[in-house]
Length: 377
Image (tube, rainbow, N blue to C red; front, side):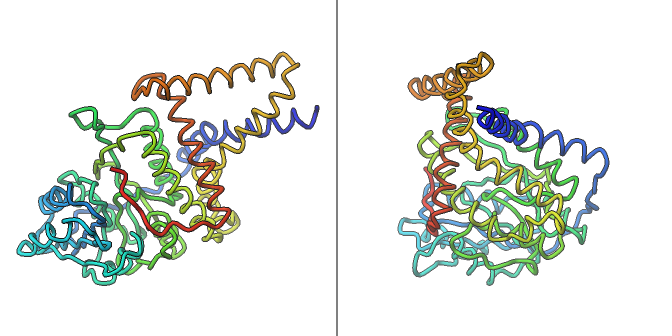
């Protein structure tokens, strides 16, 4: 009985630490240390590399969006990395040839990472900006990203992601509490020099720090880790915004998260040097707290529930058990009603994300590889 109580409290402590303790730790650290970036308006040549696989519905909008960014046209190179698209994507991109847009078609489909590896080698820009076909840049996004590279310690820049809900007609500043929470974490991690990840839909890196990523991993997972291993910083630029449309269903969101976690859990562990607190203390804390432990949360939740069942004869633990049952029933109601907003969506979203984490981590541990990606739209 005593062992179960200890395991229960330790598991609960991990969950509380990941969602509340870690943000507070970042806040305390930022009060002591804040490494500001030396920004300036510079205009090096940049290459915007757009990953595309069967994106005929959005690729023209994406190219138009990129052509209209506020940046000198003679310093802007646009390359579409088509991963052997079978729809009209290639024909649409070819129509922009007179405007300087380059089409790099993979003869055989090998996945997004392989397509980006090949295209990045052919890019001529000093700064590479990797962007998905659905990632629409605010007009000053590129300029705001690039100003960070004036600081020679900066190797990679993470812009701010905003979501456009397909059920609304306006672009929101953030989609709910979750994204405000994520934005806060990334800003604090950037301030103390421990940011170690970027959004897969858009990020920038110095060309001379570019690392050809193993096809089984994601670019946005490995690239910032390699930048840190080479002694450079990854920074978060809140003024550089781009937006994406939310996936259309919980099923799509679940599949997207599961695929991402399967690849990124294994990818993060492949750079074990950064998990050594003796060499990379704050980066290791960030990777452990913001990523690895968060992906392991469902395992702790299962342990908490099982322990709780065996401890249900103790009044305090009976209270915890009833609370968990109510929470999961609440999530089930959210699933049945298919509520997209409001209080019913919070437990449901939490459960979807953690189920995706559970399966994704299990797949990663089993050594499953997911080199291909299918856009969830």
